[in-house]
Image (tube, rainbow, N blue to C red; front, side, top):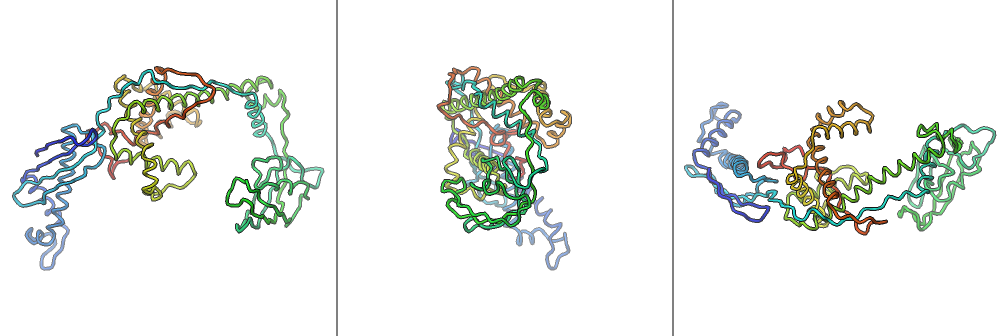
Length: 459
């Protein structure tokens, strides 16, 4: 096999391949031998059809199949021999039809990762928010903890609903042209934020505990969060199914002990503040890493393969649907050309970021050792309340160890960049950072020369 390679761009190569007739002839012979095992033609026994007859009937199909096989096999061989690090299937541009006695030749464009040489990645200018937990945040956390420890008890000593009750209802009716039917529905008469419709809590306050078929008429405000029912008239029929009163724990040392977080109320407030500060530190550090990634990409606008960008856009779209609680789409039919074009710049930067972080990790010798992986498994297992060995087995079964190690390595590079950055402490960020990489699927090559993310690839 003869191979000649030309540079098309920093991320594209053109391969000119010529395969000798001896190889082509052998492939054709194998193909016709396999075909003859199963084909049945009138006048011939199964498996006994002469090759000239098969060539006459199936020649074009066999030639096309063999040509495809030759292209794939020679492409993988050329990629391995010349260390092309291909990131997609070759795009065949020129191919000579198979002719008896002549070599088979073709030309194809192949996208590659390209050489990534990161520049100016130390001394990046980034912002870091100052840690500031307001006392109101601590009090809200305390109030939330009280809500979590609140018990619901049956109503005693009264016959009507009152403030603080949880009212279970069945609801039917209309809101504008929308039909409503909820056989089981709960309304907290104290919770304005979760009120189903403005005014509904007041309508249910002071009604008999055995209320049946009560009519409620409301008008939805023009500034209501759900645009589809703004300004609409609601006509509802409700039946009270159950009413419970809330037994809210007193804010004292006994409550602090019951939470298991502290022995005194002051100690509980201190514990909650520490929890809030720890969470906020994680957010602040993530923001700093995002800022470093943004500046790194800004300083290194390296060319990236279009197929990698396409893959990143597909993944971004799938993540967006997941965030919105939407079902996955096979093939992403909702990702039309217009939306795809709008998402491509962000997709290109995502690919740049991953490639740059990989290159910096290689250059700086940043790796993830067994002890670091074990520590991550232990902390993840603790968060899920399962044994580390069980979690490791689960990740190994799902082939996730490599991708998790990859993500840990990316995090280590980002920490390195932040540690080498020029950091300004601010009360509020003036710029948003670049979202951190979600995983290796868009760019890594399985450490195989010429690995192609094709239909048989598991990611």
